[in-house]
Image (cartoon, rainbow, N blue to C red; front, side):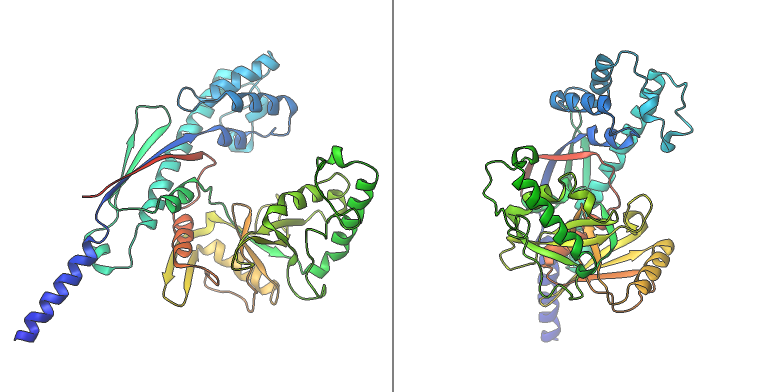
Length: 411
């Protein structure tokens, strides 16, 4: 009887500890901006007038005082008084709302409603990200003290308050909320399949530098190797005929220069049109000061990934002392595409991309059926939880998020 009572007391202490170890409240204040979202709605984002007006508006824009759409329209009409917004925003997305004869006020009304909806969706996604990130592995805590988020609209324009019943890591939650979180699954090349193109690019860069084009290229006053300008900062893998998708390894500080080299007119045109070069910015070494350049293969007409976040049903992190894993569950359509992709690319790698950066590039050893992707490797528990939180919350509209204050109040 005494043993039973002692067990109950010990269990009660553990139970209550599990339910209270996260006690506290945190208020996270954020600011939203629709500028990037408005840019994404246009079908003429390469138009000179459009870009000039957009850039001018961005320089002047203060989300606490005005709407970006109004400022953009004002700058656009100053540049082109007879400009018709329907010419820029009469896209497939708005085919039932905007036509060639739509007036500027009519287009503004449609865009205003779209922006409002995007803002509301962004708030919902951020709320779910916070809830997911604050979940604990303690069963009692999740059962009796689930994370909850209260959202308030603040008096200052485009600012909101998220109050969560948890203490949070400020750096982690800031990164989680400010990330766009675009997910993509891509096929890749073996490095040997495109190596001649990369080696040719190195020669072209060398020729352009010898012709005295450093200033035009935008690399003046930078110490460079004139004989091997690309390969001096992008170390190729050896041997070249190995079955990996890595083009080379670079110091993180040199990645911008590599990108600049590879986008030089003439150099860019020498590379295959369906080759997309993306950086894997982590896990090359323990110091994480190096990055791998990955040869991604574009296989879709609109240059989108084979799979994107639209097909994700859920994402969950599983952590232990030995291994951290993120399990991603896809819908029926996603499962079908994943099955076909993996069946056609056995023994190659696929690239898991978040916000245009390769997070993982695992080998495909067999066809993946069932629509389940398990991501593991050099993941810490925190990284697995944050990645799962990002993916599980769903796609976020291209509304910019800025965390402006985090205030913790302990009960």
